Length: 182
Image (cartoon, rainbow, N blue to C red; front, side, top):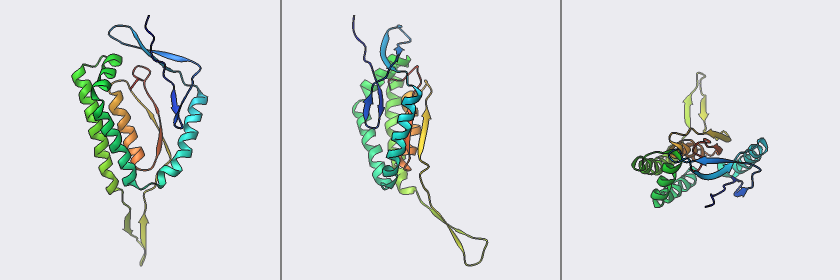
C-alpha cells in the first residue's frame, strides 16, 4: 500500500497543520492522489489576518518590484511544465497536451501582467471649477479573495493572483475541492 501526500494550508509563510482532510481522487481511476486540508473558519480567519498584515509592506513596494516576483514565478513554472501538467492531468483528467498548454499559458499570463507595472498611472482631470484640477491616484484595495473552479485550476489562480499582487494587494485563494493540488 503506497502512502499519499498530505498537504496543509500555507499561511503566513509556513505550512499549518489541519485537523481534517479531504481526499483528492483521480477521476479516471478512482485512486486517491492526495489529502488536502478541509479548512475551518479559524483557518480562513488566520489566512485573512496574515494577508492583511502582509499587505501593508507589499503595497509599499514599487509596482516594478512586484512585477519582478511575477516574472520569477513564471520562470519557475516554465522549469516545471511537465510535472505541473502531469498533476493537472491526474487530478482533473485533462489530456496532457492541454495541461501543458495551461501551464505555459499561465506563465505567459504572469509575464503579461508583469508588463502592466509600468502602466499603473494616476490622472489629472480638469475640474468643472475654475483653476482647479483633480488628481486621481491608484491605491491597493487590501486583501483579495479568490475562489477557484475546477476546469482551469492552474490558469485561474494566475488570473486572480497576478493583477491583485501587481497592484499592491494580497490574496487568499480557495481552490476547488475537485482540483486543489495545483
